[in-house]
Length: 231
Image (cartoon, one colour):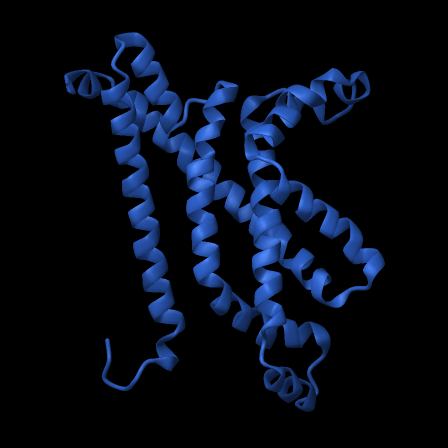
């Protein structure tokens, strides 16, 4: 093995790292923002409102992320009506297609995570909020959602890691992320082992960093449940 080629092309991996972190962070943020109201509607709205949300969630959870990306990146361009619309300047760019697909995919999973956490809110907390005269919106903001976020954190941390690993698919639509950088180095020097082992090391470092940060957040959010004197 010759890892000198990695040192010579390390700048490509750094560019790929930047693209990966940007894609994952923006997608997760957009997906979470969309998932919160959808999860609330899934638990409180009528069946007519819930039906399209369920269809959305089932589609994105029931199909592979790669297929979804191909449908967006290659599929939309086949319709002349879409190509003549105001949206085409965005969807003709691979970067936007990846962001769009990743955001909707993680939104579907996050919607179900938060929905499950909301439905397991202790009934006593809701009754206490109603007895205090809170409106539905105020109860959601102060009682239900903060409590739900605490319970959803372990499952959502897995979604963050899945999204990070799934972002490797961005390289199949010409985006140079970490995996895309490894493919470039591999094709240049015919050294797939060194190229993709380096990519794996990048993903592992990011994953362990995420796990560490989530653990710190769990300690902070569950501090009130820890016995006195514990750290």
